[in-house]
Figure 1 (cartoon, rainbow, N blue to C red):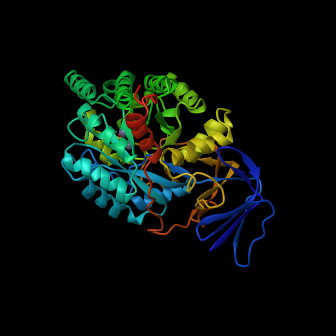
Figure 2 (cartoon, rainbow, N blue to C red):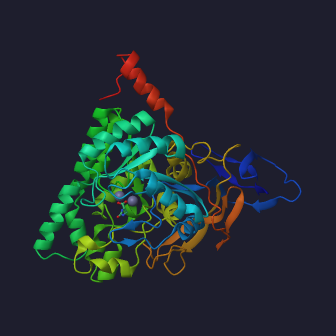
Figure 3 (tube, protein in one colour):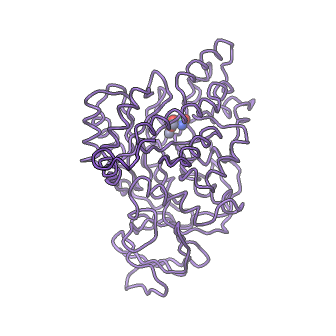
Length: 479
Ligand code: URP
Ligand code: ZN
Ligand code: ZN
């Protein structure tokens, strides 16, 4: 199977240049001007288009059992929707129930994900602690290609990891060469405020942001950054939505602490007013955590993206349809938390980022693909158009107009967070392992064609830690 993409402009995170891209057996084998197609090769004319690394969405939840229901999007439909939007790989989450062996949960999720039509990988959540968790973390890193572990500081009484769990898990991750990732919201405060609001008779969706104000996120971000700093462990904070958490990350990075941050496209564009919509269903459709914020926070998030404080964009794709959201009709705290975005993440970021002059095309590639590949240690296999990399490519037409709507999207959910938005710039072709899987509005996907992507551990962290602890008193790892 061979494919030649001719006449396009290759856009990588570091530079853009005119070149043809030739792919064979799922890999990029040449990136040069004036390539000729061998007999039988498929040819795409990318004139006036950009040829970019396929998007990597580092935060999705396909087929997630959560808050008494299961997300409506499974691994097949969800990865198909991702491909339609130019995203060729997702990193999803294995979330064990407290008390459940990590390895059991991991294999359950691996079986669910076999139907994926785009590449996938898994962060594994640490939702409880005992010796078996310590042991299974080692097996997951050593044998199963996992190099990141997720910690939810919220969702008390369900999957919340308290400071005790963080303190056990972070050093274990470090010694394994794995990266802890964190949902930073103070779960105790959320629980307290939810109960207080309900007691006052506030039961509608407006109770959701009121029980999770920006400081609840900021406090948790500051605390977990301090914990990680004391332990000398790098961390990655998911879905930062507030000035408070961005400031905490900026300060830590300024002090030389290795802290990475992610931002969701939804948080860049949607503000808190959605929770005060008179239509309960519309308001409930926006219930996700952290919630949408007053608009000043959006400006701070854009600046954090262009200024390098936040390095990745994600969707936190977590689909619940109207009938599922209705579980919380009498109590906002029971509305399943989650919104969709895997299909539109790239187009929305392009339109509001590149077209509006906030991001360069190279920054766009960094924020949608290359930085996630680097942070999660799959670069340059993913995240770059160069010889030897996987042939995961999006051919992007920067002039293509499209109106986003739930009526036309591929996502298995009855609403779209960006409903009615006209965006300029969209994929015309998406290529996964050298195969065209989306062309001019049509998906051509195969059940199970997606590959599980092993992510190797970060050996240099381990070496640095050993050096700091054993041989050189001059290397300061803990701050
Ligand atoms: O509301 C959200 N974000 N749902 C998915 C679970 C999580 O917190 O990421
Ligand atoms: Zn979360
Ligand atoms: Zn999530």
